[in-house]
Image 1: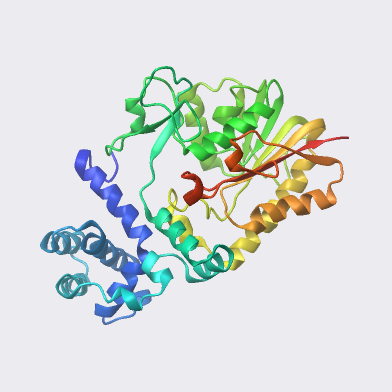
Image 2: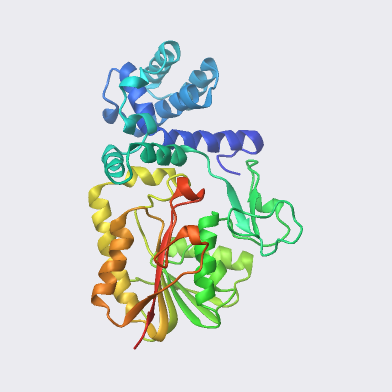
Length: 382
């Protein structure tokens, strides 16, 4: 159980947590009107309570008396309980400030500089559709390894992908076979990588918690799954035990200085990134965004690719993937890598044609109906 709750209470708590994170900028705009103190000066538990109360009032439609009383009760004994009570009662009585004067970033609750960036790249309407998508509740599903006559099977692109019902409890209980819960986009990339790994020995960099391992180990003869985080690798190990990955083995280490002295038939860099393609599934990630963070990620990605290139055997494959929509992390990384690694030639990744661009996987959420992901691959000629 999470939060010590079960059933409908657990489902409500999870939904409240998500909506509070998703709509943070919109909620803060509404709260600032009624709060006598700047929000940034409040203690974290107080601000969290205000946001949770506002989310119930403005997003979830919770009856005002319940939203206010339950939120104040959660702060029982805190000296700011009176402030929270007063602010939420004013918000319940007077409502949200006129949204017509709100910026697009406030209205759709995204970082302002990122919204400006997307508008310059995608245009206003496409950016609004993307933000609306990001704020929606994502479907959950998994590849179950069989389709047959199962009427519930069949994703947008994969015949054995099944969308699962949300119930507040683990969706794995509705399956009659071991499965890894992931978006269809991640499954598509994993399947494409696994096709290139068939029969070979693979090093997977950035492996935890195991979404691509699940596909790679089904076709490769050996998978070494490496990640720099011991905590994340523990999650990988839990998935390995549950799913029976007999041909995959864990390694904790840095992808920029891999603790290995051998080469592999395939090296996959599943790179850390800004996550702008999966804000719907990782709503907290949007609040990490900054131009400096993008620069940091792009630098790390360059280092990972250069280190990985040394570990690919002749005629082997180097693959690269992100869950970002930003050119600096995707196409520009490809162009830079190819400009300095003349012994590598790009190879086409096998996905439906509408998801491919010059042999690379390029998925845009609102146009393809799944998470935003990018991937490219090269074969080493010498």
